[in-house]
Length: 161
Image 1 (tube, rainbow, N blue to C red):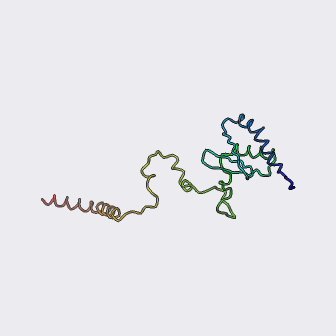
Image 2: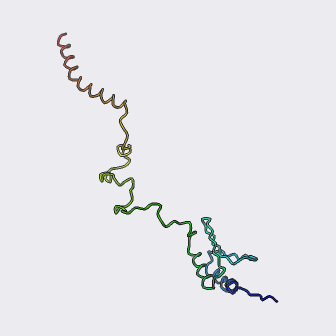
Image 3: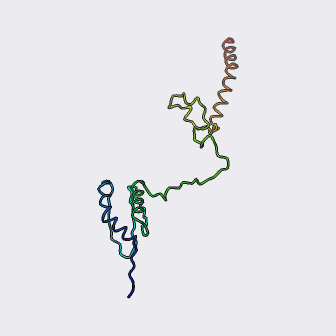
């Protein structure tokens, strides 16, 4: 006759469901608790979060204390811990002590005193002067230089009359 051996950890899970799960649900009314029987599979804790993440924890060889700890962890987390990358994608041997670069890093301190909106501060820094703007500027310079000569010619013409 074959000997039937049952895993004692399944009994821990069943005892937890029968005795402690109802107390847990009463202590935490903001948490919805579902119990779903699963035939021929090990016990599993599933945490569903408001952002749509789901985290599955296998409790096959877990004792009653372990189940309580996992349940407390799922209760206090706000999402899946595996989705968060704790390491940076880059590495440097000499990190900057000044902090990361921002668009305001190389700005002059005078910009703190300016009143916004400001037309001069709204322009891009690296825009070159267009050909039309260069021609207009040359024309204005030439006009200023010629104004002295033209005014003298006009005066001479008027005197001659």
